[in-house]
View (tube, helix red, strand yellow):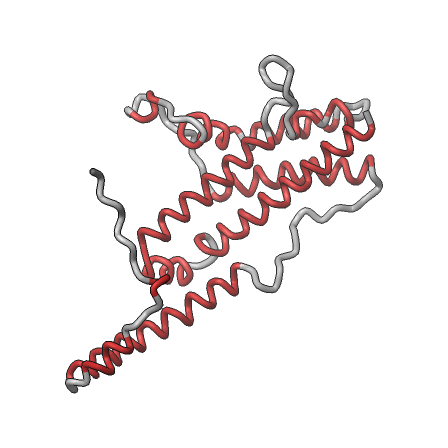
Length: 226
């Protein structure tokens, strides 16, 4: 029983840390400042909007997974979920049960989105007869913090550990990615202006060399249905 409890807790920590990394990526690209958002939009609005939706919905799906029922419908499959924790770690005052209950309330919007839009496609929602619960960055932050409170409570009370639940980012994190985009955009604008000047001067060969790209960067058209 002890090993099962420890395994559950370790898997939960891993999943939660990964979710916080994904949320940090979302915030860095689309929720930190207007300048970053505008840069991504100016490079490719459709790509930026698609990636934003994918990462945001992935985080909501992660919240849903962490708050799943502890067992499947037939009690055959176990879930790595905060709802399984009170069985192993609760105290006489049901402190953990109360923390889990509060976290479920904070995360209810993520389950609603998952049931109707992300993991399933609800017909009533698709035709406009049902609405999604409002979702926001503030709600995600609150839900993540409520799960972090649970993990820190168990670490402190059962493992005598003060746990930090914000993973330390590597040196080559999303800021490096954004800096590459920023410098790349500046270089593209410089080449675009130079290309115009070369065209006006009739220096077409130089202009064409300026536009050359390796094959792996060239656009591939989608296949045509037969």
